[in-house]
Image (tube, rainbow, N blue to C red):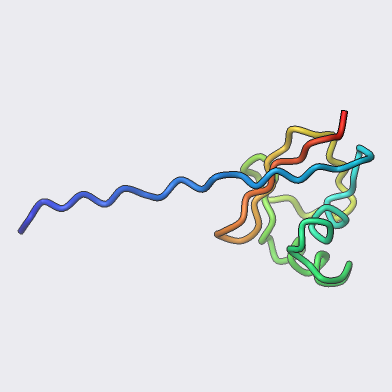
Length: 84
């Protein structure tokens, strides 16, 4: 046994700048390229694949006001930012 230590990789949030806040969660997923259509965004949300600030979010029309961290699946983390 070598005593190897496994350190989890830290995921860096990807900043998504939105011209007009608030923005609906489904629209953000489309804007960020995580969903090609509103239906695809809806399905991701319904399946519990989307978390907002670490909590599963199932409301597609949930409004984001800036500063939230949205994670999609096990990979992408988005940080919502306004232009102001």
